[in-house]
Structures are given as structure tokens and as C-alpha cells.
Length: 259
Image (cartoon, rainbow, N blue to C red; front, side, top):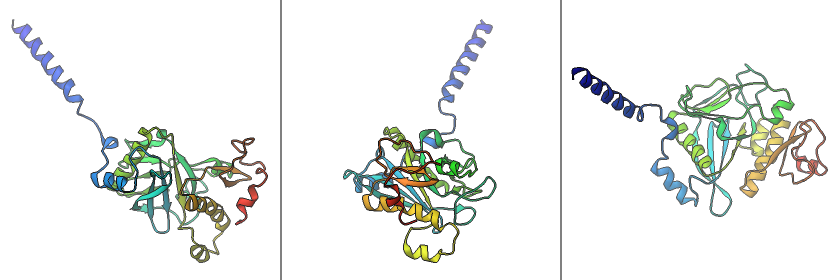
């Protein structure tokens, strides 16, 4: 009898422990969107499941989240302060240069990291097609929390909670990726004039073609790479995807006249 009672006690203890395991674990990646952000989404005519886009400006340390609205165009949802980025203005070139990257990237669900050592994170997708064509190297370039950066864009933990949740919900809405525009500064002529002596001017002018396309249409431009440069909104059905080191399709240079 005593043995049977002891066995029953152990069984009950095990069941209790297993039930408790359902509530044990790190749930950072599933924190719901806060009510004020949901209200802001509704105010601009959007929802958590709608497509999104992120813009980062190094010089002013700002990260913008844009969401598609009922009109089909994108509207600015919220601007977050970047706590820290590393290096100087200009693209990341090689592993260990401590540069935060610049360019156009696509973030997919596989790039989310809900168990990051830096609270929450998602990979920028560096190196992308252009980076690889230019033999740029680097790994684990993230947007994350913890306000600490070695080549990444570090947000506050409170900021990355919202940004990560917005990314999670847009993927749950059936979207396969969102565009990430990593920029040196707001692409105005005044800013280009201030940085006219930079060796990166031609690269930045190439980025500006894409940012201008978004500013005009309020739709993230489709991007590709040829002749080791970005091209945007190419509609040539014969060349998809383009060879990053090959010749650009006829007519492409008309979209790159700013270079």
C-alpha cells in the first residue's frame, strides 16, 4: 500500500511538472503589439497583417516603419530612435571593419531571431546580391536590442519589441518578406552637398534612385543588380533575375542618369 501510494505521489508530481512546463520558457518573440500601436495602425488605415517596409537613416539615428494602407500606398507608422550604430557613413566592405551596412535588403521569416542574446533581433540579409558582386564580406549584421552595436543597428529593448512584433505579424499575414532600406542620411540634395567630398557619393546616388521611386509611388521598389549597381522596377520579362556582374537591360541607364 505504501509503495502504491508513493508511486501515485510521484505520478502526480510528474504530471504537475509537465503542466508547469507549458508556461516555462522565453516568450519574448510573441509579445503582443501594444494598444497605442494598434490604434495608430487603424488611424492610418492599416493592420498588423499588412505588408511593411523599414527605412534606417544612419546620420540622424532613426528607424522608420512604413505600412501598406487601404489605399494600396504605404504610410509612415512610427519612427524609432536608433540607440547605437557603428562605424561611419558608408557601406560595409569587409568582415571586421565595424561598419553598419547600407543598401537595399529583403527580410524573410527565416531571418528573425526571437532568442537573440541582444533581446530580439532580425538579420538584415547582408551580404545581398550587390554586396556579393562587390566581394563585400561580413556576417550576422542585425537590427537588435540591448543598445550595443558592432556593425549592427542597435535599438532599445522597448523599441525592438515593437519592431519585431510588427515583422512577426506581417509574416503571419502571409507576406513572404519586407524591404529594408539602410541609408546614410535622408536623401536630400542639401545632405548630398554636405557630403560631396565622400568617396561613397556614386553609391549613395544609386541608392537615391530607389528611395526616390518609393517617395513618388509610396510603394517599395523592386530592386535587382546588374553591372554591380542597383536597378529598380525593371519590368523586362527576359531577365529575371539579372546577372549582378553582367550588362544591364536596354533602357536601364535612363533610370541611372543621376550617376
